[in-house]
Image 1 (spheres, each protein chain N blue to C red):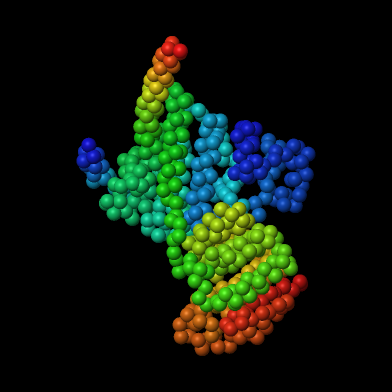
Image 2 (image 1 turned 135 degrees about the vertical axis):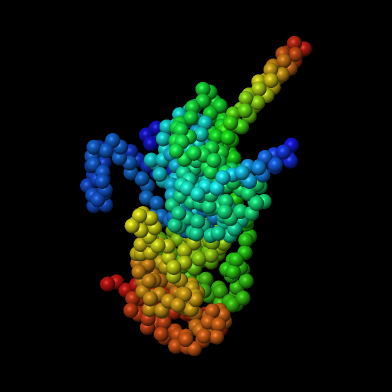
Length: 69
Length: 448
C-alpha cells in the first residue's frame, strides 16, 4: 500500500507540468484544502457512526444494569 | 465587526487582551474624537456608520523584526481566534502577521475589520493559503534552510509562495512531510489548475453545517500541529548567545559595578520607556522592566532575541524584543515606503532612557560609523537619559574587532568620547570599571 502511494506520488511529481506563466497565488493551496476537506468529510461520517454505535452500546448496557438492580 | 463586538466570545477575547481593547463611540464621542488634531487628516466623516476607538499599543513592530518565536506566537493567536470564534459563526477575512502587534511580549490581534460573519455551511477556511505563506513557510524556511525571517518577509508583503520554496527542495524533501503538504501538493495542484477558471474561489456550501464546522475545525487543528512542529529549538547557540554566560572579560566585581551603575540610574530616574540597544540575552532589559519600565530590547542576533522573548513571556515582563541592528535599522516598507514606518521613525524621541552598553565599539569598528554620528543618533532616540559603556581600544574585545587595525583607533580616548558627547549631553556621572578599559557614563540630554 505504501509502495503504491509512493509510486502515485512519484508519477504525479514526474508528470507535473512546468508552469511558465502566471500562477494565481493560493489556487494550489485552496485545491489542497478542498482535498483535505473531502477526506475530513468522510472522517466526519465515520466519527458519527462510531459515536452513535458507542452510545447505543452504552444504552444497552445501562438498560441491562437497571434490569439487574 | 459588530457581530464580533456584540458577541460574548468577542467581549471575552477583548477582556483577556487577546484582541485589542475597543470601544464603540456614540455620535457625540465620535464628533469630539474627529475634531482632535490627530484625526483631522483621517478620511472619516460623521456619516460613518461605526466609529471605534482602540486602546493604544505603545510600540508597533512588524513581522520582519520578530524572532521566529514571536512569529509563531502571532500565528498561534490567529489560529486560536479562528477556533474560538468558529462555533459563533464568526470568521477571519485574512490571516497575516500584520494583524498582530505586540504589547510587551504578548501578541495582540488588532485588525478588527478582519472579523466577519461566516456561513455555517462553508467547509473552507479562506485565509488558509495566506496563513501558510505568511506564517508556516517563513518559519519552515528558517528552520530547514536557515533563511532569516527578515529575508522572507521584508520585501514580500504576503510571505513565501509554495512555488518559490519548491525550487529549493531536493526530490526527497518534495515527497516528505512537512514539505509534501505545505509546498509540493499546492505547487503541483496549482500547475494543473486552469488560471482562467475562477469557480474555485466561489463560496462552497454543504447541506450539513455540523459537518462543515467539523471540517474547518479539523483543518485549523492541522495548521496548529504544523505550527507547533515549527517551534524554534530551545537552547540554540549563536555567536552571541553565550556572551553573558561566559563573561570572560569581566571579573564578578567589574560586572557588579556595571550592574549597580545601571540599577542606580533606574532608581534615580525611574524611566517609563527604555530602549536597550544590543540587548544580548536581555540582562539589563530585565533589570529595567523589573524597575517598572516598558522596554524595547533590540539586537541583531535572532537567537538571543528569541531567548529574551521566552524569558519575558514566561516571567510576564514588559519587554518587547526585536531583531534590529541599529546601524542598519529597518527601513520604511511598502507603498511609497510609508505603509510600515522605519524603525528610527518609530523610535525617535520615544524613550526617556536609552542603554548602549558595550555596543559602541561594534558600531565604530565593525560597521564603520563615526563616533559623532553614534552620539547624534543616541541624542535623537532619547528624550532624557543615555547610559553608555565606553570601551577603550586596548580592551581585548575591542582588539578582537580591530584585527590589527589598532592604529585607526589610537586617538579614541575617554576624553575624546566625552568631548563628542558634550555637543548633546551633560555628563552626570562617569565611572571606570576598575582593571579594564571600560567606563560607564550617565548622560543627560541637554534641553534646547
